[in-house]
Length: 176
Image (cartoon, rainbow, N blue to C red; front, side, top):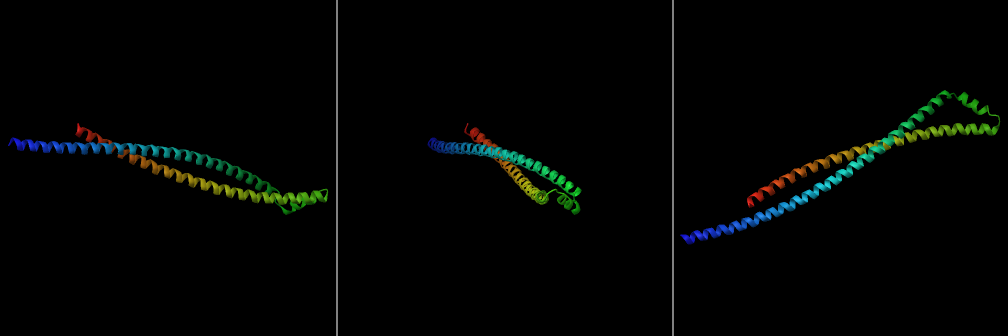
């Protein structure tokens, strides 16, 4: 009976050692898991920081484009108002014909042509700037959405880290 008790105790001792080794392995794996998750969270923080910088840069560029567009529109509006005042064909013809010399008349005609060309160029610039502004706005929104997704990912990883730390504490308390 005493021998059987000793054999049972030896078996329990071996099982305890195996259990202890598996618990130590489990603890080691949990520690590595926690370290890797911390590295992942650090890289996510770095990515969020880069996205913040990108959002700020895009916001500044967008603001610059908005200011440029406002200036172009104001200049164009002023130009249209001036053209409206001098809009009659008669006044244009009189402007050209009232020149003292033929050379001056030619220059006045070229001026009117260049002025009309400049107005067309202004319209093209306004359209181009509007397109750039829309593109930057879209890019900014995409970057903000990416940032939100990365923040959600960080939150998820932080929860997993907390769970791993709880598991580690349980294994430690079991080992103690």
